[in-house]
Image 1: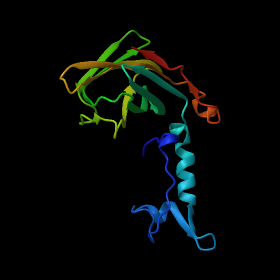
Image 2 (image 1 turned 180 degrees about the vertical axis):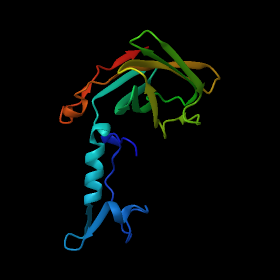
Image 3 (image 1 turned 135 degrees about the vertical axis):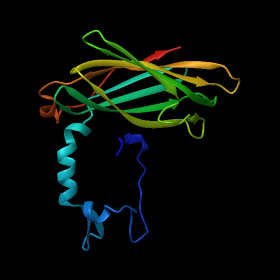
Image 4 (image 1 turned 30 degrees about the vertical axis):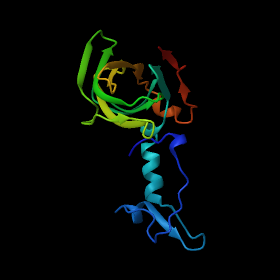
Length: 199
């Protein structure tokens, strides 16, 4: 399951008897003969309700560097003992006309206790996506576990141009902050950090 940005949603009408080829279709949806459409089942409603705190979008972090916009949306999944589980969606958009290949990533995670952790590697999630004018967007999600409720993470994506030159694109500073009343704020309007732009 992933987070879909509203501008990516496209109206869809299926002409197939089975609109979705998914083994869970009959469990999550039921066909309403009078309305001639599939409707959410009780199982799906309960599933969404149980995951609502984890799926609720609180804050959107966005930064543009050298014509590449990086958006990060963190989600708090829950805490077990002294471990705090986070899921985050990363969206990378090439706003230029020049093809760019994502070669490396460098993440830094700083805890309020003063510990700095660095994570680096090739590409993201085992891929080195090429962002062109026809496919300018790449989105993925990942997870992290922290030992304290307040943490910050930020970093850099290193892209390669067709000429071979590289350019570093900043990942915005993302606050991972859990509050005991996190689940009580499910109806809160999501906050958006002011977008920053670097040349």
